[in-house]
Length: 170
Image 1 (cartoon, helix red, strand yellow):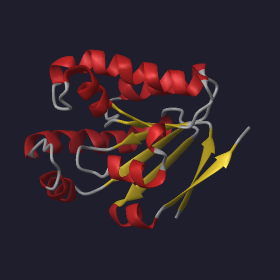
Image 2 (tube, helix red, strand yellow; image 1 turned 90 degrees about the vertical axis):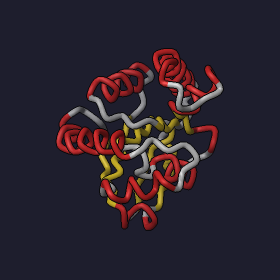
Image 3 (cartoon, rainbow, N blue to C red; image 1 turned 30 degrees about the vertical axis):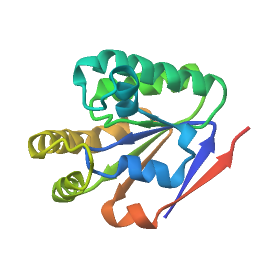
Image 4 (cartoon, helix red, strand yellow; image 1 turned 90 degrees about the horizontal axis):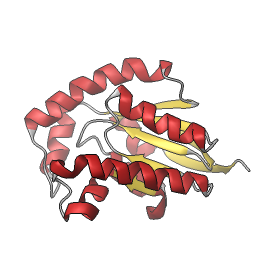
């Protein structure tokens, strides 16, 4: 499968912890294009897992995304984006900056997320992944009707076979 991504645009990754979002982003996009909510937490509190700073981390996350888009830079939002409000905020930023917004949903089985979580340095654990996976099932149904310019759903097998083609749109 080939996913064509306009440059500039905002790519919103959506999936539970352990679904491969960060790995996919690193494989297909420049490091500087990826804005990670976990990394924003680490930048504020020296700890990606410190949820006490999540409000500030997401303020920074959104600010960096908006600044990149204002400068017409392809940007990848690396967070779970499981809640409708989170996705709405990202769409609003893209609209203000007049760039297309793409939802990239990583539809990976819960069991795989658990296995991949065990391999990570920072594990979130079974209860968190279970809750997030259930929210993701809701997102799978909702996202196609939320106003994204493009919605791409990748299953586990497609993650390794997919190629991202960045297309200059200006």
